[in-house]
Amino acid sequence: MVQPVRVDYQITGEGPALFMTHGVGARRQVWDGVIARLAPHFRCISYDLRGHGASEGATAPLGLDEFAADLEALRAELGIEQAHFVGHSLGGMIVPTYARTHPQHVKSLGLICTAAFRSPEAKANGAKFVEKLYAEGMPGILDTMLGRWFTDEFRRDHPEVVEMRKQQMLNADQRVYRETYKVFATTDMGPWLHEITAPTLVTTGEFDPGCNPALNEKIAAALPRSELVILPALRHSVLVEAPDLVASLLLRFLQSVEARPGVPA
Image (cartoon, rainbow, N blue to C red; front, side):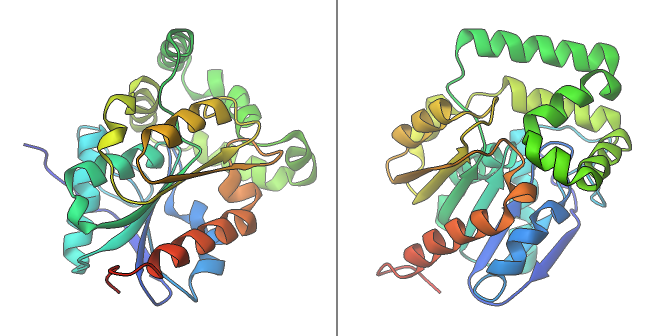
């Protein structure tokens, strides 16, 4: 029996509810730039995953079922019957996991820079990277990760943002990061994505190496009601590097779902 933990959250704005789930080693603040534009239209609920930020659960089990159970506990605590759910990276695996178990609470999904249908070679490379993380710790993989996350231009023009992210990673709970990254790298939601019936926006950066457009094309094709958008010239950290672009895309999609007949307010 999965036991949910209490997560730290923030609510910003008014309107239909929108839960926002971040990725491995991040915090809820990664959504702030997107929230700034969405808050006039939606009640944005950002939260820290278990073991991350100010949430409980640093010593608890870490897995997709556990993360989804925490999300359901938060929804129930807030008394929200139906909502939109958007996730970035690992969050893009958590929200469809949630929708699979609790479809009655889901108006729509947004999957941003996530992965499924990895090739055998990509799975093997992911397993090797997890081994490197366990063997060498954060210092052994951090430069590689920063290169995957940000474009060269952003790293050049915004070194303070990159340095802040670097320090956040170095200060993270290392067990939580290792175990959470393992979930991201070794989980394949491809076999059951066709079960998700909620309208779904699928998007990723054109040059995101780990969550590339080819994988996201397969994700969109597997989902019965999906829309795919590739964000030009971006890598993985689109929430930080292009929050206005992501917010505009989400706003259009979410408002289109709200405008459909039969969607509860």
